[in-house]
Length: 279
Length: 311
Image 1 (cartoon, rainbow over the protein chains, first blue to last red):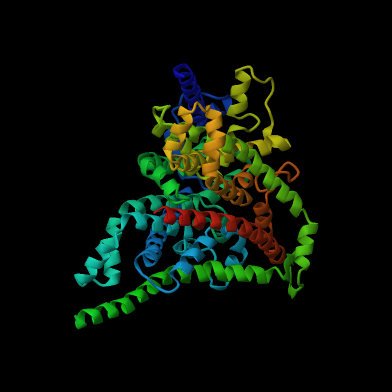
Image 2: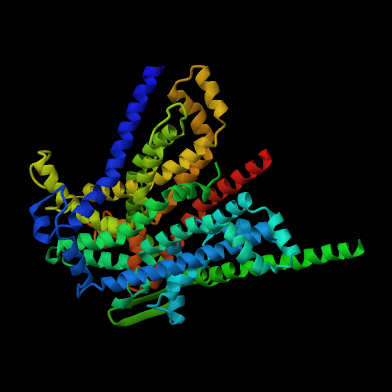
């Protein structure tokens, strides 16, 4: 029994190490190549970093054909605004379901779960013609406002309220004369801060990485977000491009999110399960 | 007493209205940005509406003609591509996720560093798919680092031209999807296994059941709803596959459109403003995903019911 268990453990460690190696290896290659100059990269693979991190960063930020600085600012703005709106409105919606007893409460809850899995892609055609009529083409508004209706975040928030917000707190706030909106903003929101943070990060990452809709909405060069610029890099004539800059731009798109994730991974991994089926 | 009763009655009436008020932002947004677009997509699918050179054709009402022409185009080929790409990623994904979930959830194994491993295997999930594809394109290009490394290690004699072969391209797409999603699936399945009453596992172990028997007779049957949830949500995600093959093959689905997915096809129609065809394709995708969503819906609400009963 003991021997079998030790063998099983050894196999487990080997498989886990190999998979972890696989996950980290490509990022390692990315970061190494982002520090090497184009001729160094062309010469071949290396496990050791080069000395061109600074020049690569400078070159990609000053590239005349790719508005990278605009891309970073646009991505940051759209992702932050969507994340903030998404978590606030989802919490408000979940609070309505959790704290109030009204006639259609259950129906509303079931309806939101029902629409949860419908992908945005299938409504994109209607979405594009609508925002065209509203004069919102090539604007950030249609990328930010729709995040207020986020059924997945709502579902997570409802579960969180059920286990973390006793209604007695709401009751006592009422007795103290707090109005409902005030109670939500100044009593409920502070209690659910951890959940807001986790879902905020998920929403930020989803928006930061989003490519399909932004590529159809944003037209002018200075409005483009990072995923569009990366795809543009792919469609440009590859061989004419400075590979150091290619790797650097990918690093810019990937590494900040990876660092935020690694700092908060404990909460994020907890949030993955809480937002889905309860075990 | 009387006053208290009055206060109570008033409370009931006045508070429920706040429930409706707090729902307004969500439903107003949903109505404008999802529901109206959905109806308009259905409506558009009935019209001939495209550009031929500089002239705009339509919109003219044509009934279901767009549906007929989309089936006569390469729709089924792209549906097949999408499903194949999904399966290539999903098989290793579910295989490794199940094994890892069982290991992580097994208290007797006392795996060290499981938090570390979980953090690492989930990492690719937060990476931008477009940049991940661009990274793979650069790393696996003909004279890229991967070919270079493998030649130097003596594994191959000449560079493998992954993106010129059907299965090289599909394999890379599947591999990327596997990497991005197996960590997520592992964590979901692990939570499901941890939710199983541990007395069941202990009793089986005392009776001398082997690990494989415990897995097939106890673990799998009890986590079946969550397993189906993972399967269906992954399939819905797979049908939406776009970023990775789009960037990897530069929107062309090369070679010979064998890695062109349904959403890439939709993107082409949207880009060229062929709204009739795009509408018909969207409606077909809507029907497929809506049917799959119903399964997820029953799992989610069914699991909730069970939980309520056990309380």
